[in-house]
Length: 350
Image (cartoon, rainbow, N blue to C red; front, side):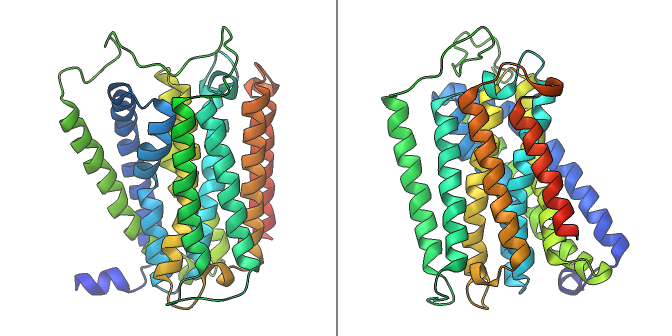
């Protein structure tokens, strides 16, 4: 009975309900993880940027990883690809949303750091490689395209370089009155978990991330049911519906981090989560037994990849130019990111 419920299509009402419940669980879990992550970043000495981009990005991307894997294993290649890349576009939009919560200045001005710039560059490289893979020869080994191995190696190599440059930086952002530096709170006054050991905090961090991950499998099945029940394209459901749910952890994380006075963590969690979401394609390529996931992508998915590239380039430009204040309480990059995302959704819809 349980197996049939998990494998058979759900009615439209059930599918919508699952999306709403999963979104609520994701939001609550992400708020909790924000406080734990900021504290662990200070205690470990790794800094908000590196911790947020790797560990925090992984935890908030778990649901998306499971969504992509389950969809690909079910033969829904378009849904799997669209979820991975659509999540990147929606999560980049989350930075513009978080900018509204940062009243002092443009968020990208306050959070400019070498690590965030480096992770943005890494993300552009990963997205470019995914796009190139779709136009490369359709060759697979055990139904896995070689580009998947290259993506993993590229990501790990990028992490190594970013870690090394963090130890001996060759570039620093100019400090201004609006800059909030990424420095541990050595006084411990901001440590909300002063009475909790780091081991217990790591345990809580893993458990909450696991809950979010389990929800991802259910969301993926609900998305497949939505495609069957509504007749909507896999591109729209994956990029918009699944992508938005996938982006909720980063959105709430970014807003909560900004309000906690940790803008560097806000940007790092989104960019780091986006880098890991590109690796979702690797998970999908392995799970998809119909050949190369990259070559299963249609024009909509490739268009979405190009849009995610453009949004990332705009974000990187904002981090470099560091506009103190811009249009409508946003920097120029925030307005452009919102515009590109809306134009992308409209184009996919028609």
